[in-house]
Each structure stands twice: as C-alpha cells, then as structure tokens.
Image 1: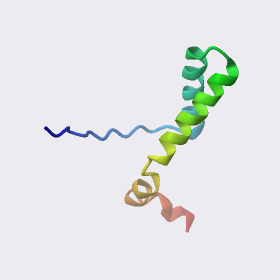
Image 2: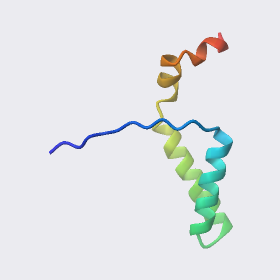
Image 3: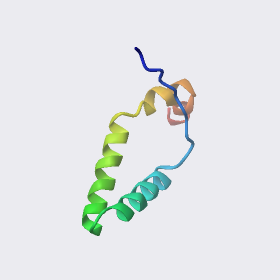
Length: 66
C-alpha cells in the first residue's frame, strides 16, 4: 500500500517560523534551555528537508538576486 503525499505551501517569514517553533517548544519542555534546544533542532531538521531553492526557482523568486 502506498501513501499519498500532499504538498501544502505555507507563506510565512523565517522569523514567524522561529517564533512559532520556539513558543511550542517552550510550552512543552521542562526548562527554557531544553525548549530552545528542541526549537533549534526542529528548525534545523525542517530546513534541511526543505526544497526552498527548487521552489524559489520555479516561482522565479531568485531572479531578483541576479
């Protein structure tokens, strides 16, 4: 049995993403230090799996950089 993968695009800023991840982590961890570590790891994992550059090229967003 194969799983269907759906792609949802969320428009946000990096700052909003960091803030949301941090808030959720701090609410669910015992200490601030642990919360920031969890948020950092989650953000790192999310960005490492991101296809940002491929997506940006498709949307012609990188044209402004050249």
